[in-house]
Image (tube, rainbow, N blue to C red):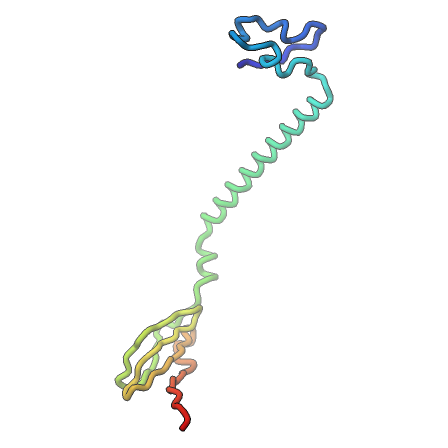
Length: 147
């Protein structure tokens, strides 16, 4: 279906569209939805400016988005360095003789080592990775029932 904007005149737009252009079975009102709209109408002019303004805003937004993506991709080193903790070149954690490590957990610059010691004792050693030493030790003691 074709829509045409015709200059304003006393003759309706629907009368200027031929039957061949309308197609069979279509009436004059469906093929000329813009009949009676004047191109110099202030509402149409305001709508045109609004559409052009929104188009410019969309283009500026896309340019800003693409620029930000390029900026972030071009400088990945500064963000990664700020998030990673400083770790000592060598870290030694002293555990009791014969201890077996059950699990370890890392959070920030702290490392928790859960171990089973000789004689059934268990404990957790918390290692400061920045300083390279054991900062604290937790000894897990079973709670004996009171008699």
